[in-house]
Image (tube, rainbow over all chains, first blue to last red; front, side, top):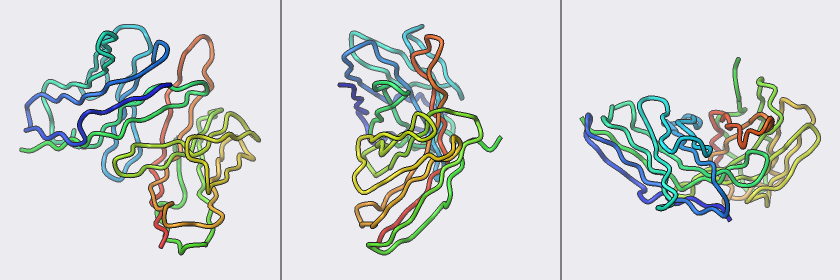
Amino acid sequence: AQSVTQLDSHVSVSEGTPVLLRCNYSSSYSPSLFWYVQHPNKGLQLLLKYTSAATLVKGINGFEAEFKKSETSFHLTKPSAHMSDAAEYFCAIHSGGYNKLIFGAGTRLAVHP
Amino acid sequence: NAGVTQTPKFRVLKTGQSMTLLCAQDMNHEYMYWYRQDPGMGLRLIHYSVGEGTTAKGEVPDGYNVSRLKKQNFLLGLESAAPSQTSVYFCASSYRASGGAAYNEQFFGPGTRLTVL
C-alpha cells in the first residue's frame, strides 16, 4: 500500500534562512510523488512532482525536492525563505489509477522577519 | 478560464439537515474528486468520478453521495448532516492519464468550509 509521512507538523524559520520540509514514503512500486502548497483560505497548488525521471526536481518559487530511494524520502527544500512562503505544505503519493493521491498530514511553515 | 470553482464558500447546517456542494471545472477534465480536510489529517478522498455518469468511493465515503450528470460538474451531497462532517471540502479535477503518462496533476478549487452544529 502507498503512504506518505510528513515528519514535522510545524516548521519555523527566519526570513532568508534555508527551508527543509521532510517527507518519507512507503510504496510497493516505483512511486510518483508530489508537493502541494496551501496558502491561508486557498486551494492547493502543485509545487513540484517526481515521476521517475531526474531525482532532483525543481518546482515553482525556488523550491526543489530530491527523491532518495535508499532513504524512501522526498524532502522539500528552499535555499532562502521568504515571508510569502508561509503556508501549509502537503506531500502526496500517487495511489492506484485515475490519478488518485494519498496526502500526508501537512507541515505548517512559519517564516519570521 | 476560471479553473475549478466551488459553491458555496461557507455554510452552517444543523444536525440532520441536508445540502449539496457544487463543483464546476472549465478545463474539460475527465476525472473529478471530492476531498475533506481536517486538522492533522491532510486531505482524504471521499468520492471520485472518472467520467460523466460514473462515480466511485474513496477512502471516507460514508454519509456522502455524489453525482456527475455533466462532465463539468461534480456534486457532493450530505443527506443528514452530522457534527463529524464539519470540515473543509475541496474539489479537484484532472485530465485522464494517457500516452504513457503515469500521472496528470490535480487542480484544486478554493474549498467550502462547512460547520454542522
